[in-house]
Length: 82
Image 1 (tube, one colour):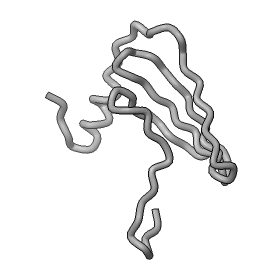
Image 2 (cartoon, one colour):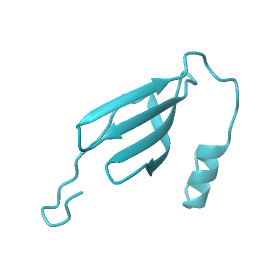
Image 3 (cartoon, one colour):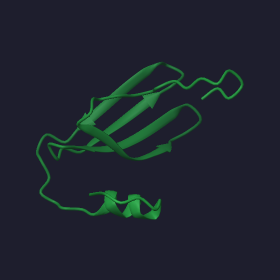
Image 4 (tube, helix red, strand yellow):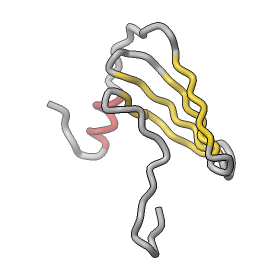
């Protein structure tokens, strides 16, 4: 995000069926994204900003865990999923 120029740059997009559950900085130039998909496949994406490189690891099997984590996050923001 460049506030002075009022611009934003997307650093990753896997399509509408994938979403990021958590994101954090590994160091000054590396972002880690932890995500999930409608197909219930987990993934980890490492984005190396200084190298303009992205590496994605995807769990090859599906998970059979029902989590209310996304609902918890929405409620924490005062939002509701219907």
